[in-house]
View 1 (tube, one colour):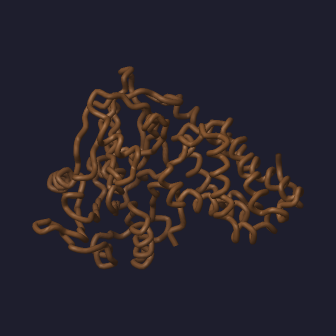
View 2 (cartoon, helix red, strand yellow):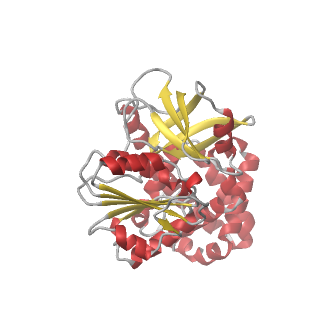
View 3 (cartoon, one colour):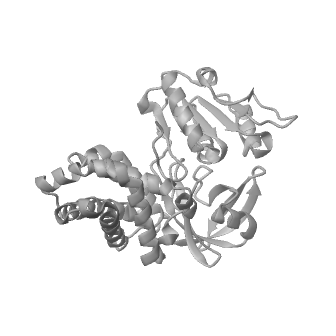
Amino acid sequence: MSLSEHQTQLIKASIPALVEHGESLTRHFYQLMFRDYPQVRALFNQTHQSDGAQQRALAGAILAYARHIEQPEILNDAIELIVNKHVSLNILPEHYPIVGTCLLQAMAEVLGDALTPELAESWEAAYWQLANLLIEREEALYGARERQLGGWRGLRTFRVARKQPESEVITSFYLEPVDGGPIMGFTPGQYIGLDVIVDGEPVRRNYSLSDAPNGRHYRISVKREPWGRVSGYLHESVAVGDTLNLYPPSGNFKLREGDHPVVLLTGGVGITPAIAMLNALAGSRRPVRFVHAATKQRHHAFRDHVDQLTQSHDHIERCYLYDQADQGDDADVYGQVNAEVLSQYLLPDSEVYFLGPVPFMRKMLRLLSQVGVPQHRRHFEFFGPAQALE
């Protein structure tokens, strides 16, 4: 179903209503969908539902689509992010009619008479224009991963071969395939999808891979969140020898090839994909600057490992920052990342990879712009729903 010129103009005319009612619409959409199709709850992080992050993210996405309805190619980067996230959670074509039905029903009930039959038909066409694009790209990615050496489609069972505390709040899980076969490679920065049963309910989550590819096992490093259902389950209930079901590696946050210097700039559990990148870079000669911000030393994961790499590789330097240090903590900077710290560790033409909590990300984007790092050399990804940084 493609959009006519008249339908395109109707979509554009609905932008003010989306600005005013977007979050109300998406809140109602999720309520309808979870009520009428409870089987899809497993696909969504309920923490992001309770704090409104998912609703805000979807409202922003719908608005962006409406604003660029005449030039959807402008949204290619966002679409690729969605495709990778969907594939990591095994989103299938049969899920799209559910979303479309609930979205149009939510529009009708929130917008009322403003959603004329003609506008509803236009939004249905717009939805399926995007949905069909996503379905096509997702199938291409499913197929490409399945054809790789060690690749697969859907779930594959892995055994916890090792469980290693990395800090007071972060624990690593080493995962080996039960079938004994090879496992597909990945690019440092990517993540895997995890399917678990918590309190009798199926739940899916993504976790960054925290070690360079080795062909034998995957490693994820999970922070125990105070209200995290899955992180709590993994920390408390999953032991060595237990099995976990995984979807193949996904994600478009990737370490890029080349010879430019690399700055890995992380906060908190954002360190996990950066460790995979650092381990891969240790075997290169690219200059690497590893800058990590934590609250205090006992919350700082992988410190000993990074210290060992910096001592044995002269192309790697590191900087640790603690802003709530305990007595006796050993940091390079007691405080937060600022422009002075960045200027000290940035090299000409550095590729900067940064990630962590949303406030950290917002601040880093502002600081990197302030110290002159061009946009094409700034690379980032969120834990959780993508949302505006500026």
